[in-house]
Length: 457
Image 1 (cartoon, rainbow, N blue to C red):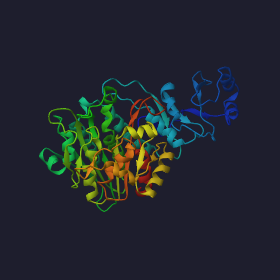
Image 2 (image 1 turned 90 degrees about the vertical axis):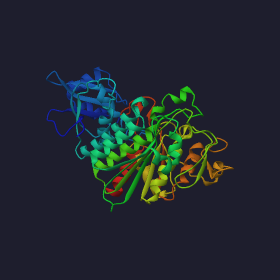
Image 3 (image 1 turned 120 degrees about the vertical axis):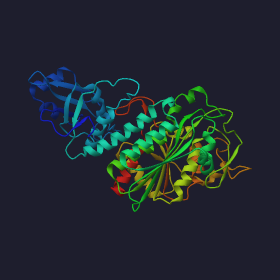
């Protein structure tokens, strides 16, 4: 199991979750000395406040931790993660039920995450007894998937180019006994011309990463992740502020790999395929240009209206490949548009699908897992914004409005399956929140994992 978890501990210190409704009863249960200490310390059951109550043997006997009222409109189910950094070394247990014991326990693992590739880890000796009725092994799978994605996104582009992303995918495939392949070199230009177009300006060769796992007789689920390891914007160069965090432009690939780990580790009854177009969108004499036209894998010709709309190009070829074997579900993940962030902010990925059942299940799973998504429409009248006078389609819309929708509509041209899901994610925490440190973040994958577990578990 995850290092933060233990199965049992006789001397574990109890954590009492306290709100206005149970504050008096909780303090009474501490005994006269404990209640007097809490009163003298000025403890109030406000969300996020904690107090360590001394024990009779001069150690500490209990922890009080404030949470929202049961009927509060908004509850942060990951708030208990604050305790990972706040508590002294030791082993703890939940004395009573928080709002969601499973997510509270998961928050301890997510809150213990540290990105340590370039500096030593800070000591973290807080342990949690897995609550009764909670599957600690499954929490471990989820936490490992989250940590994998965060590590990949947080790694700077000098150490995370297409070759390094391939190596990470290859290692994951090997870990789970998946069949691994990669298309690179002359075959990329021949088989995946849009991937080649985006990557041809960089000395770091573009490639299509492809691995499969599971029995061929099981329902086919294909994950596609945008793997733009750095995006300068190409010849339509980004301003410096917009380029600063472009190491995270492979966040879609990291999301696909994190989710793939969860699926394979749980051994869901699916035939999983993961496709990652891995490129660097660089500037050189070989870079693709505005108004260039390329024929895509599925035969559509694409006029380049903007070289900074490169993610949808590499996804288009990968989606075409995914669609060729008609899987039961295709899900793609991409840090695709600023328009999605303008509409929904950094914490709420935009979801696009024609499958109403899938959309409903995903919305419910996202809310239950505190991994929310918000469905936006594939509004067909906007397809006219992608018209080109010289090719089958342009890669960007005219007018600059509805950018997340038109990007999704562009991708829709390369998929025939109804059960296709496009997730436009930010993959980054701009500020630390409980269980979600600043930096790379796995978004939407836990929601989809819960959905797939219900379908194929």
